[in-house]
Length: 418
Ligand code: PMP
Image (cartoon, rainbow, N blue to C red):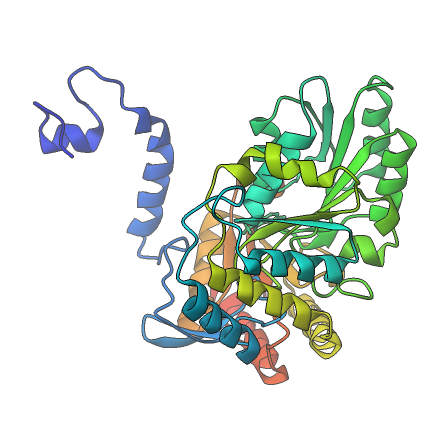
């Protein structure tokens, strides 16, 4: 849309009839991106999957590519039962609900997926949101109000920060994964104030896990309520695959668990489960739940089927851990610098010195037929440039071997390893 009286060059530069161009604050980012792309590299943030062949393979620009940068941890996206459930719901209930959960957007399938979550987590209550991002926005902004405090890890996911900003509570950050700093900061707050401590089971940039046992004990000691985001832990931590909080043995002390369907469950949607006796009131007061359309029937049907199958997925879980440990050990042996000393989760992060090296490595892998995620500040902690690998239970032993060979080739070509 060209503005009145402006030449095309004016529009490009953002000059127009005296109005301040609100996009000019992004000029430095635009320039950085243009300079990078001018060097001839592919844009790491504009990859298109032309065809998806399986949970672990896609076709990108005509090339068969192994996927090592999805959150499809349990490989559920092509599960025949999951797909059949989605197709059936599409036929029986149509393509969308066209409405909010509290008015015309709650179908039988939404109740069924909430039942599946209650069974999976062994909780009294489950509330499904349209995304995991919205689950954090909704839960955090609704639980902690004016005069309350939210105490969160400095490396928390963007959806947690945005949930804080949507609400009215005071925000206090503690040093990433530091039990001591959490204790210190909680100790400075007024004893009588409402407090919500927010933790993540797995931190998704480096793939490290939180010392939940110690942190939950400290939060309890200071009288705080606790919310744990298990987006990257659901499916393969703990006896029932509930997450890191289950493995840490703190389920009884955690008040709210937030999660997503977009990772191990293999579809889209978010949720919160809890045993709090007043939990159901949140359906009336939680704005990111009330003021948005509910998930389509096919999505909730696929999610419910997938969640029920994840209750009996011990073999997949074991294979995922085997893949993760093997890739971690292999990359370490090749000489890469990794985000964690050992494989703590299904995410393995490779730390690279700068943007140019990260993009060169990323492109070197893509050209061989391997897709990984590139992550850069501000998404990453401490200004790091990372290549993030996320493993899938459906990666075969052979694929993990191929992946390591491709890393060796790209690493030597870019000088990342000797
Ligand atoms: N929490 C964490 C820790 C995440 O990493 C993400 C997404 N990457 C979300 C919440 C949001 O989930 P969704 O993709 O379902 O919006």
